[in-house]
Length: 108
Image (cartoon, one colour):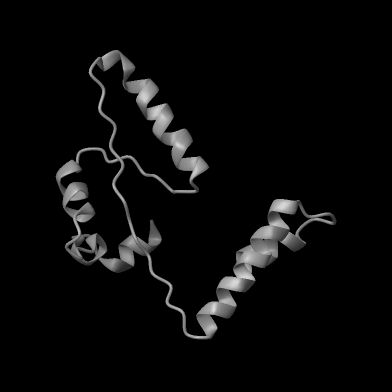
């Protein structure tokens, strides 16, 4: 809510997108206050290419489609097994299994 308010009031004439985001944040805040649950979730997006030279095209397609769907995508580099396990419907929360202390993680 605070981020949406800041964006909407930071300029003299806010963009229509900012005003819509503010109204949406207000509706979400109202629903949450009246008992609706707000749940974080994650998904795993994969792309398979037959020709290795098409990898850049696949990466660009996933990035563009993720932005269109308003998903924050982060590439997995070297931890594909952990990412796959996290994407299974097992209730695995990776942040609870991180070896880096929470105080250090918050500073990153």
